[in-house]
Image (cartoon, rainbow, N blue to C red; front, side, top):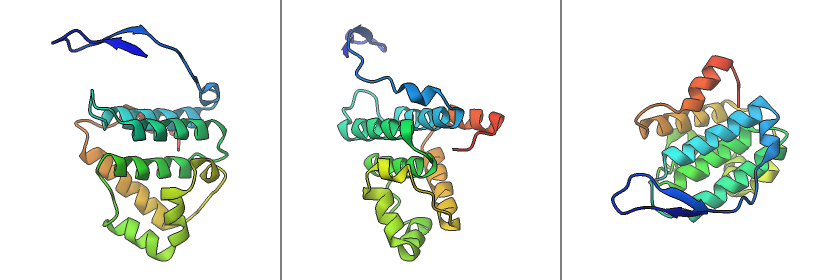
Length: 162
């Protein structure tokens, strides 16, 4: 994509570009669409403008690609959040829920950080520690935003679980 940004202007003008992928399956199921919207809004809201972030972009593309075909979006979304927060400088390595998961389920903790996301989309893990970790991720995200994520308000209104 080519963007022209006039000196002193707040908004740029798209002057060219090419679409590589559109992720059509993300529009076919509400939970899948909502998970993708959550991921995109998180990247948008916690990435500083005009700063290159190729690692975040690569993670975003991998996540959207995985969400298209994942049997279960839950672990994909959690793994994305953990990896993204680390890239954004908000690592959770010393927080109690993460430390507890590493102690009781070290394989799960390692998978959430290092396993290709596509593999996580086929898994389902049930453990109260994962719920605590999700709450931690949510609170860290909320602590660094000026206002709540729009997609979370949508989830509350519709009852969509992701």
